[in-house]
Length: 351
Ligand code: ZN
Image (tube, rainbow, N blue to C red; front, side, top):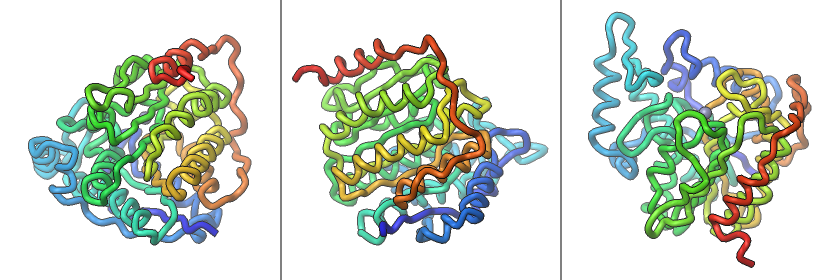
């Protein structure tokens, strides 16, 4: 029986402002589902720590860290809410929550690398993948997954870490952090064109990092069939070729057909199958070492069932039918051209 860890902390619920989609209720929905279904009881709790400045500085500038802290702690009148960009709020507790969010993924990564657990799902917020080395944006304060990847490489002696990002938005912050770094493979599937604007297939990395950034820009309306093709035909062979020693996952669930912020048609079973693909990669390449970190996902029912679907793959459980049902197949969606472009750009067709 694989030992699967989870990270959670009540502090994650204190970062919030009324009416914003990136809300504490997201996490409450997941936790109550995992409790009700008994899955939480099948997992081992990993206590988060608070990321230190030295941890964050593996990825972020001192100026950004100071700006997030000062903006949060000074707060805004009259409600305490201040804005780092038009989408990205902070309240006085947000800096502490963000340290514990990044520290949660660090703790899970250490527990996996130390062999205390086999894999983990980090139920953290605020999310991270839009935060660049120098800018907080897109609901994200610090880049939780990027900090964990840098920690694994620079402090734990790993040579290669792969990050797979299935959030519906392109993880521009993670891409920026490792764009010229040959030791991090970053693979993103995302709706395109869409927020935050980048993620075209021709963005493949630069310098020594050429070909270690892999973007799969998918048209709106893609569902399970298209996503699974993207994973089978591009993600799987490229991750295998890279031979990571650890797999990190930026796990956003806003490509779900029920999500209010995007226009993809992935269903819960699709998440189960993507997660099964990632688990098979981790099992085959890195002793099953896989750490998920929550990113987006704004329909609370779809979010809870889809997180559960990923956890079910880690626990070795069958797919649990969900109340939202299977997604429709939309005629006219054709991703042949984009998949061919990505395969060509990354030398997958050169024998
Ligand atoms: Zn997203």
